Image 1 (cartoon, helix red, strand yellow):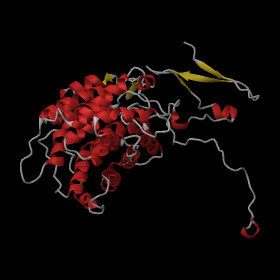
Image 2: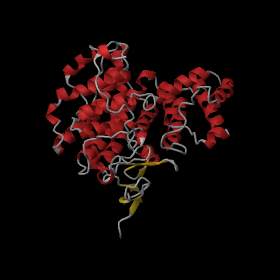
Image 3: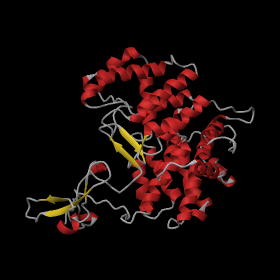
Image 4: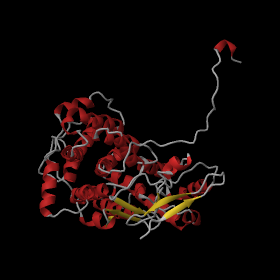
Length: 432
């Protein structure tokens, strides 16, 4: 079959050029513009990379118009319903779902790497007790390379594998320790007899005073949340991890960079903003007035938790997390919870209002996840930290894929310069 080409013509006298059109297994074709500058002296201009494929990947596929999210070809709905988080982690990292023996071996290795170096605990005392958990997480995860420098040779496949296991295993421990530090409670060491999720909840909420008994409904809710957040294609934090990794930075530094990017309120901090919004609305009777302010272009009111950069349909993760939200609130006797009822009322109005329908502003995963976290007793400041725990799996997989991609080069975007042209220096005494 002949190679597909796109012909680019110019009105400034530059001769037209043919650019290859690349086709993936699914999704839009991609125009390969790598030769553009060499042949024409021109760059492309795409702020926010709205129309740019920055890499070739086989991990996660999203069709925003149809509301589709797949990990390695598997629909998120099936994985969230039937899999454990570590089963999905294996899939994302290796490309295939594990058989029983493979899963048992994977779980065993992760379980036996959950402890952190004892000296790492001293890092926490260097932070103020009221430090934001994401600030602590950035610092502690970045410091891992100082303790596990035996696995930071990025060109060695075995080193990359060991780093992946260490990050997946230790993030729950580090995240839970971050929470315990802010509350003043003692750190809880991991327990190998517990599952990945139960162990995390134990380290978060257990104390030396009494035996911690995991609630299976709450454990399953947390499992589902982690699965839904495990990866999401080339978003801001994943692109940050890839960009940092393209320079040859060690994996611990790359994941710390991803955590820093995730901290932004437009990314991982969105679920915090949803709870703040619901708190400001306070009562369902105030929704119409709030909606009116949202529609007013001069009103500066934002409907947090609705709409998505990629999804122009109902976020498939939102449907799953809504179901999870119902299960958690019913289990905890919070079915008439004011906050959740307010969220449903807001969702109903927004989904029926022509203004939001026309703009395809559907609820996203952040709209419900914050409510689930709150019901589980997790403080708002920890929401994004748990997001980072889940997304670490995707970040590692994307980083490993980037390292082994023969087309990958150090990230170096170009610019459309709009500053001053050449000027001659004038001594201070002569300047006017």
